[in-house]
Length: 162
Image (cartoon, rainbow, N blue to C red; front, side, top):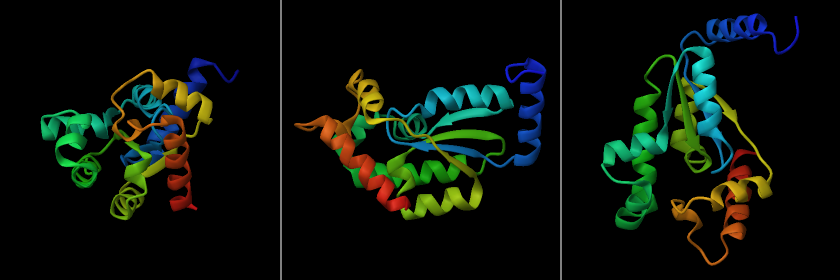
């Protein structure tokens, strides 16, 4: 059997599903790392539901992430993010994508550590910046130098994890 053999891939997915025993999988990374894309594919492969913390926050707040930042500020966004992540982590068999900013929050980090298996997705700065530059819905990058801001966010998030 080759690595791309569908039967082998299915057997690996079934083995992973059994080992997880329903525990949530949490994909973590800086904006643009591919959490949503990878998460949707992984959830489909493992026959799990996919959730994105930003989408869940928007549903709960009935406004977009940029609107939350603008009207309520980052601290209120982070508080809501922690509440949403806590709620989603109570679900069995879920794949959840969360941002790196959520993961460096000590409360959220401990929730994920206690309730789930986390996977950090990493990408090079050039790739990340190319991806995030395509969209205007990144409140943390609404600065004079978005690339430098992104580099600083990466540095800050990694320093909290090491």
